[in-house]
Image 1 (tube, rainbow, N blue to C red):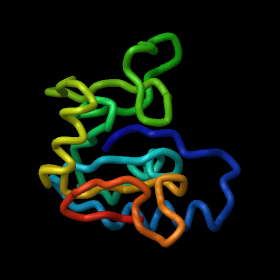
Image 2 (image 1 turned 180 degrees about the vertical axis):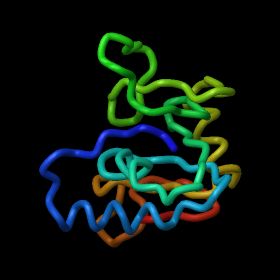
Image 3 (image 1 turned 120 degrees about the horizontal axis):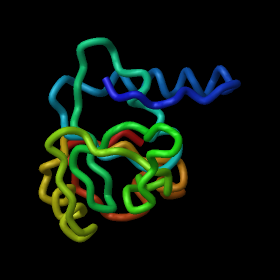
Image 4 (image 1 turned 30 degrees about the vertical axis):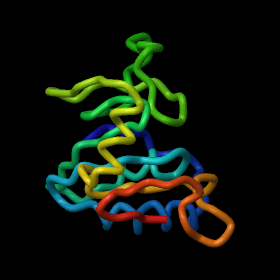
Length: 133
């Protein structure tokens, strides 16, 4: 399980949404996380569920947040927070990252609220096997 901090004092409804979204993760999935609440979701994975996190800015195998003093400003998630790399991670350009999504190589894309259009669909065109909006 990836060590993501749980936001202290999070509103009950926010935490309930994140916990529900975490139930969509299945063992072995490749998952793209959008900005905002999706980035916190791995902290609520069920025991025994391991996923490979993909970041649209070019990381496959994104790890948790670094310990203070160990931050690498070149390793960031879509929310511009510093992250670590999981064992076996790979780095590439964002064009390849979106290519993975469009080609259906990513099992689940979880969009943040500002990534959703006014009619409930995604606000930009992505093709993952599944979307959680």
